[in-house]
Image (cartoon, rainbow, N blue to C red):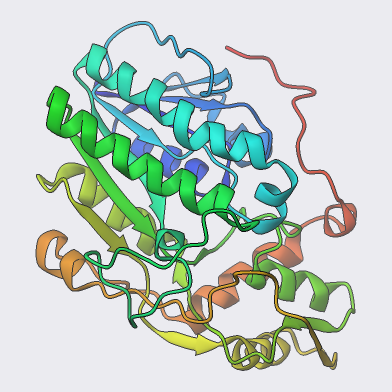
Length: 328
């Protein structure tokens, strides 16, 4: 049985990756310090003999006994609310955390995949964004703690690949959504749905003309799995190129939820990108991958998930807890 370490395992994407690798017959070691993760996302795995969990901060030395075949580094705050609240930890997990994971991969002879992001492109000057675009990032702006940590993460990963011969893969993830997102994480999709469910007006920052492209989580996980199994070491965009303005998206959410809330407008945050759309030609050519789930279908599933949450979850501000769980 092959063994895989998944950091950020209790997060939105990390938990779905745990599910996928369990399904594929792997022994999964999940690791998370729960600074933004939620153990409810993986509590269904604790009873399985193919899964174990380490409550650990990857910015500190990582020890995992036994052999490892793969490491997927998904530990990082990923929403503006999180990385503006914990900027130092965000920088450390992208730098020290990645260094520690790469050192472990080198020691174990494991292949490592890092979760990079479309934010390495910053507020892009080309559209859509291709992997050979170097980006337009403000390194000292409030978002720089996330953007630059991910850019450094890519740089050190390629250095380990070129200098030490470590097998590495880099996925640049564009906006993704689906069950297990946190309602209070500040990203536009859970923010809109949360506001609709609470009977609040939907808040659009700026004039709503900025664009985003939303990929359903199952499609993203498939792309990541294929990239890990591939022989390609350069970055690969994985996302859905179906672009929509934020104003149009707000109207879609109002229609989906059947609410009669208004859309209100507030000033645009500093360095918020105006356009975000992946060019996925590389993923199509190398991985044979493209998204399958339409936004209408994915949003319906996601809305039903959020509706199923208990009322206290809808108004809860802090989703992080380790109470009631015992580390294996």
